[in-house]
Image (cartoon, rainbow, N blue to C red; front, side, top):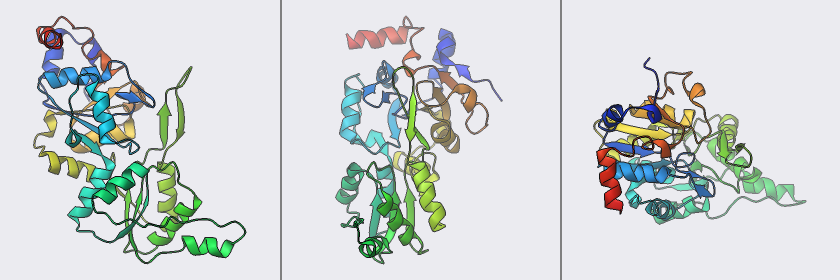
Length: 315
């Protein structure tokens, strides 16, 4: 297995050789160009430089809490020009998949308010009544979380307002084998920058796994590292040469594994949750390239002719 190349140590000739090896860049957002609450210094600017070199840039995220406009505005501040079609999110993949299988029935969705709004705007029929718990009235509580025959699909993604009643209703509905089960972000943990070090908080993965285990149903994963996301990207963006695509990520199980499924070149950055040493333990997650931070992509070769040209255009 070839050794992972640290791009921050490449010679000018080797860096240009690397840049010539791909024409499309797909980059994760959280942990690569953004941490909760603030951008990662210089990361968007590196993507902007790649765009100015003629690379097509896409952002691929399992985060469903933000709108396309939020990401576009963040990127624009750094000179990276994107439109909504350049932002690949779980909810877009779900809509694509539901349309592909000609699904028009009612859905119970455990997801963010942003995702619910997008689903509704796309014509997806969601249940209007959320399950509730009733203090001192267990009969009413049970009635609210038992199977609803009108529900023909359950969507389970990251939801900060997820509670027992939602999980119980999801399990009840999924006990019918004809009910579709779609899952979004399956991360075990969310890594957050804190002073003086990173901390981790619970992700949606364990809750999705709980629903899966209790209902006996395996979900169709629409986020990284699911095959449905791969099919969506290849179909929507007409990718015919995956070996000419570079995927940039910070996680092993989501980013590096997904890039392997797609046949993309893999670049791991060290600003997120996983280390290079951990990524190198399995062939499916073994990165082709590494950077301590995406901002360092061009930092040691600022005097290269093509970078001088970019800087002159900016000025």
